[in-house]
Amino acid sequence: MQVAVIGAGAAGCFCAVEIRRRLPYAQVTVFEAGPKALAKVALTGGGRCNLTNTFQDIKELEDAYPRGASVVKNAFKALSPEQTFQWWDNAGVPLTVQPDGCVFPESQDAMQIVRTLERLMRSSGVQLVCGHKVTRIHQDLQLEIDGLDEPFQADAVLLAAGGLKEDALRSLLPSSVAVTPTVPSLFTFKVPDSGLKALMGTVIPDARLELAGSGLSARGILLVTDWGLSGPATLKLSSYAAHVLAQSAYKGQVAVNWLDADPAQVREWTLEASSRQGRRQLSGYRPQGLSDRLWEHILKRAGADRSCKWAEIDKAQRARLEQALTNDLYPIDGRARFKEEFVTCGGVSLDAINPRTLESKTVPGLFFSGEVLDIDAITGGFNLQAAWSTGYMAAVGISGKLSHM
Image (cartoon, rainbow, N blue to C red; front, side, top):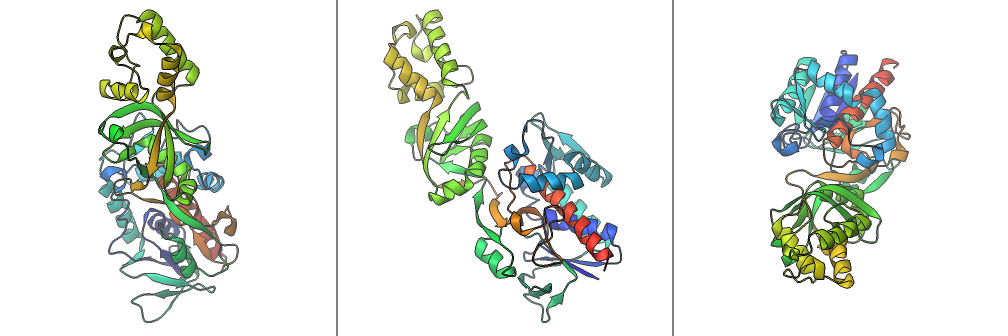
């Protein structure tokens, strides 16, 4: 009995191990186009591997998964984040939780995750074949593979090759499998504003960003870089607005709320500053959480005289300052990748699969997991959790199907 796994990433390797645990008599072969397995996992979390999250700050699953939350919810019934903790602990990888809910191995070394999965594949008898690209999956589960003279006939196939572009997916899959257009997600914004770039290295602990005209917003830590805006708030917004920004060729406007505060709250602060700090200059009294450099920049954006005293500003000046604090508009002129990491929005349509098994509705025996599905998440370990859970869910589905053959 032959099972082919296409893609030696997190979802594919995890699934392969779980299939062998359930079907020790099955031959499981993982095909990887690249030179080695789990290359992306080795880079994630800045080399520390943010492999899941406690979900403590997630009110609705859609907040973490802009696309695919319903399928992820089903996958969590197969392997929840809490069960993922236990899985890795049983594998000999103790985990540690950060205050923000991000979860890392105690070693803070992504290679521990890589080595553990590689060890489990070897010990369970999974065959790993690197440097061989699967170029076509036929309706009967026959695979065409670069470098192999004969096609590979499988009884079940898992496609777990994340990051494939739409054209590559369409050429790989049978035509009956629907594909959603793929675009990048999790990227930073290029902002051609010299005043903003002069603030390079500034960190704003609590900010809110909104893509002007879209109604999409995100909050969190904001980082000003030499090319524009980065940090969790930017990455979240890029995820929520992935399709919108792609359609506009990554051009538009981003509104920065430097305090993540409502206009009424900011108005209350400026009125209090005028009454209680009236003798101080505008430059000498600023909102908590803003650096001196950033405050000077905001005053300049508002057209305010830094030497003016708080008691002397008029109604129009106060309104401009409040606007600069809560709705400071900047042009977006392109995107930049987030370090070495890259997430793709889009992929195999969720309408094309059974949401409880991840099996294709039109190609029996063809399953999907991980990023190849139209599932993606914000940064913080959520994408890897989706990989573990969908990989586990697919393993259950494949094992159940083959055990009845």
